[in-house]
Length: 378
Ligand SMILES: Nc1ncnc2c1ncn2[C@@H]1O[C@H](COP(=O)(O)OP(=O)(O)OP(=O)(O)O)[C@@H](O)[C@H]1O
Ligand SMILES: [Mg+2]
Image (cartoon, rainbow, N blue to C red; front, top):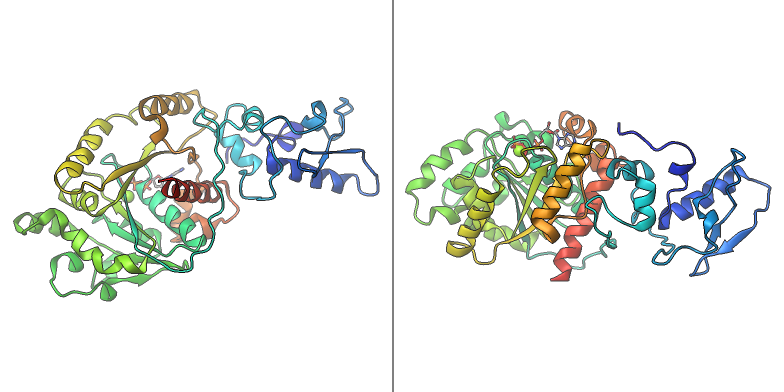
C-alpha cells in the first residue's frame, strides 16, 4: 500500500470533491454543533472553520472565504481521485490537488463521465503495444476494457500474445481452449462467434489465445496480405462493439504488425523505471512505417505511465523525462504501483470488480474517461 497522507493534511486536501468530503466528515464530527459556514462561488456550502492549532479538525480552506480561483465545487464524486490515490501520485499531493496539477506536472483537465450510448459501433480499435516486456500491457488492456464497459461501452478484448496472459487474467485457462484467435486468423470460413467468450464483466467479450498463436507468426509469412490478417478477421465484429482492445505480445514481429495494421490508435504503456524510454524510438519508427505502408489511419493515442511510485525520486524523474519526450501524448492519468494488480491476475478478474473502490480501479476509470475525452475532442 502506498503511504497514505495522515492527519489533517490528508483530510483537507483541496479539490472539488475533497471540499464535499471534508464538509461531510466535519458535519459528522460536529454533530449537534452549528458551525459557521461560507458559501462557495456557486452557492454550495463550504466549511471554513479556522485552523487554530488546537489539535481539532483542521481545514485548509481556513485561508479562503471562497474557493480559490479555478476551483469549483463539483458534485461528480468520480472527478477527483480519493486522497489515497492522490497520495500515490504526487510528492506533495495536497498542494498538487489544490493547484489541480496532475502527476505529469501539467494542469489536470476535467474528464467527464461519459453519457450512455443509444446504439453501438463501429468500433475504435486500440492496440496496446510495447515490445518491452512487463510494462503493463495486459493489465492495462483488461482494466481499461473493464472500465470502458462499466461506462456502458461494448468492449471486445483480443488476446494477441501466445502466452495467453490476457485470457488467464480473465479467468480462462488457455490450455483448455479448442478454438482461439489462432483459428480465426488461419482458417478461412471460421466465424468469430465460435471463438468469442463472454467475460464475467457485462458488456465485455474476449477473443482468447494460447500457445497455438505462436505458430501463426511463422505460418502467416507465406500468406497473401499477411499484415492485414487480423484486420480482416475483426471486420465482421466492428459493428457490434464500441472499443476493441488488442493486447500485443512483447515483440515487434508480424503479430504486432498485424495488430497495428488493424488498429486506429495505439496506447503505449511505459513502466516508470530507468530503461523506460529504451526501445521506444524503435517502437515509434515501427508505428510510422505501418502508418506509411499499411494503415494511414493509425495514430498514437497516448503514452501511459504505469507502475508509478510517487514516493521515489526515481519514478518522478522518469515520469518527467517521459513528459519531456512526448509532451501532450502522455496521458494525464498515471497508474500507480500497487500489489493489487498481481492479485487480480490470480483472481482472474479486472481490478474494477476485484477491488472496485481501490486506487488502481479509480486510476483505470479515469484513464477510460480520458481516452473517451480524447476521442471526442477529435
Ligand atoms: N500498476 C502496477 N503495479 C504493480 N504491479 C503491476 C502494475 N501493472 C502491472 N503489474 C504487474 O506487473 C507484471 C507485468 O504486467 P503485465 O503482464 O500487465 O505486463 P505486460 O506488458 O503485458 O507483460 P508482457 O510483456 O510479458 O506481456 C504483472 O505481474 C502485473 O500484475
Ligand atoms: Mg502481456
